[in-house]
Image (cartoon, rainbow, N blue to C red; front, side):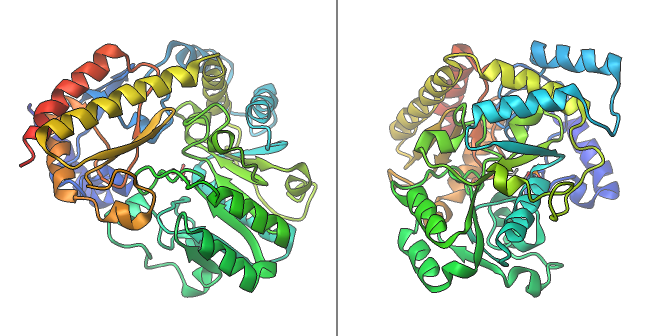
Length: 429
Ligand SMILES: *Cc1c(COP(=O)(O)O)cnc(C)c1O
């Protein structure tokens, strides 16, 4: 496979953009080699600048649950382009998408749109602090909530890949109020609440962790968070920027039946355009300006283009059976991968839910902890990643990232992927 154009573009980019990329995990730091440059996408496929075609398992890091250029999303965007790109004022589409979000995620009574997931989590935390009049927050190791100063403590994927969980430029004073616990450590949660519960403004968590690969909660873990927050008047925030409308129609909270006070969203709700949202209990949300004292604002918030694309996407994913089909496809993929790994004698396991999956080069059949993710064989992953790339399958370029499928991934794409994997696993040793 020729990559001349990608390589030339990367050389130019390196002179103009730090590290040649506009987001760190796009660089191939964790897998070696140079990042690819892409110029087009259609359905389940990506086309790079050298006209190579790949089955895409990144999906723009989650948003493209319908695949590239879904006709309904393109139609909605085209129609909006004829009407206007932005007004800096209220639109009917904002009301419609707010209604849709509150219907699909019942714990969200009121919602505000922002322009990125980072903004959503930052705003949700400010709101939780303003609402409770407390400062301390609790997060979990390996969970990523955007590049918010106070949350860049033991954060997942990008930060893990770079080996810099704590970023320079974040004052110690900012993270002093952030307590970090182990994901799925029920006793750790009970302990911190017993000691400092009445000072804790909020707990923020990815209800299924998608930034340390893909790790679901143990039974009782989310329930314990709910109980502790209730007992101490702390706000429970589910960061579903990645899992929202991804693992199920109602997000991870609908899979586990635990209701947060606030939810942050992003990725899928923008249909591929830059968007984020935070919402939840009306009594908490009403603390935000202009009706409440907690300040939050955004020039491009509720962008007509983003709301048009997002709404079109939410309509399609609301159809009956959408997530059942997605889950069946993802299981075909992960079951097939496990069979082929076993045949090649490579220790390997997976997690999967709805349109997301995690691949683990590990002897352990069930990955539920951060330490288990860190202990996976990264050399095996690197070798597998490049072997798959050579065979036309684009996986996320880091073993700490989750994988994504779309409704455009059909039998043919899964079979091609499994055929590629068969020889890619054998190429590992
Ligand atoms: C991607 C992500 C964010 C940050 O969203 P951006 O749009 O990149 O700012 C926050 N939380 C989670 C769980 C994410 O996966």
